[in-house]
Length: 298
Image (cartoon, rainbow, N blue to C red):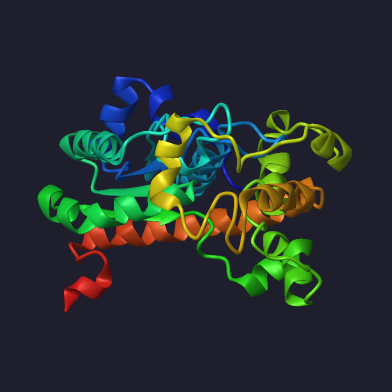
């Protein structure tokens, strides 16, 4: 029978300086998982902090599997989400601010002797910004360093085994571009994850309630909002183009009705194994003095 580890034991911020010092000195603690996410709209039914909650939860579950080798550093409080600023409550950092925050956290971990850091992302908008910096940061910090969006290890075939929306897409049952592109953000997938990991952050919203609200995220936007959206405007978006924003927003809400906690647990089990395996590979590379990623060995 596996030894029980209290979930707080792997959270850096919930440990004392003595506990971290001794774990590093003994060589038991080698690595840190650094969750990042966003504060942004997730339709009518999910809390604004979904991406932070899920990235942190995946890190915690992975660290428990790897205990005592890895700890979970505190998450970034906000991410890069300017394209959602038409929805009230969304917050966004500038690219430079976001990168500087992560740089400073990684620098702190390096200073204390951590051998490897894996940034675990829960928000699609963050991925490209960090990927740009990784090669430079690896050289500067001289450490095993990488980032991963926790969902990227799962193929569409594997999603079809769990999620009805993906099966419907494959079967040609989704009749509009809006429905076909509404399968990730705030939809069945993320809603199922939250039902399993943080059900207190999920609100019951029917499609009747959604329609009565008369939401419009494509017209009569304030000048400030339009400033945020301008870099992403393509062929008339958000009001026009092949996939205008209002139908897609409704498609997400519709697809979310398919979510269950059971589906979420199946997703969590898969994603946890994926993140934990990547972190273990990074720890092994650091301990052996091998380059990371392995492709850089040539």
